[in-house]
Image: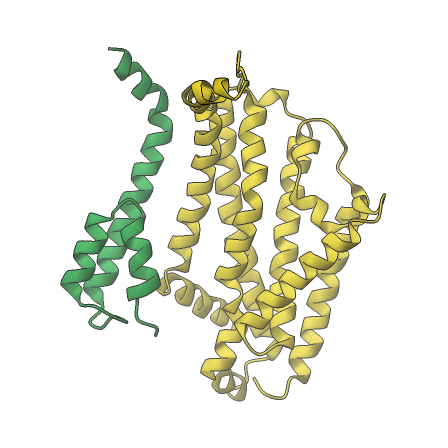
Length: 70
Length: 255
């Protein structure tokens, strides 16, 4: 029961974090799907990296290393 | 005016498609949540470290967290945020020189002033919206977990930091008219900050430097008043760099 109270206390901090992660992940996946070519790697690889590292790391890696310059 | 509006629209599309709007929004929000989160977790972290610190002879008896810690984090992280912001938007004008896209627009009759102001308005708007969101979020957490009423000069301090950000935007645009590449802009801004910090070593000159506006920790804690000369000098730099940038972009031979 005490754990639940601790979670409830931190909930206002956790929710925006989750929202940000989800938003960034959704944006990254949208970007991967709508682009045909990447700086390196292919679509499947970037999808796996983005989803596996969804806690900011995957999307950041994609935008730094994978996003093609226009 | 009509031409400028069209250019602003183009800038908006560019920032949206390039992902800069989303990314900057998320970064600012992340900072706001982290400010409150780290302040909230401070006693927990101290508890975790208590054994280790006790070995070294440090005994932590009680850690009180107030809204002051939250705003301390806010101020402390601002420096990183400014660096991220400048890196993100330093290329707003110079990238177009390199791509050569401005030549077409200018030869079609777009005034150079229009380009300058459209871009300036766009980055100031991005900064303002993101900063307002970040401050509002920190304010909300400060009130939710603790009490903001113990802080001093909140409105003035928040507006001072905002003014510093606007000055950074003006400087990005001004330096973009002098140098050719993005690294040049970054170097110039870095040089400006470095010069300010060197001048800051002279005792008593602190209150005249615009960089004092970027750190409001003592003001928020009630240790000092907001320095009016720094605000005036900051506004003067904004106006002067905008006028100077307009003159320079008109005279620029290669766009």
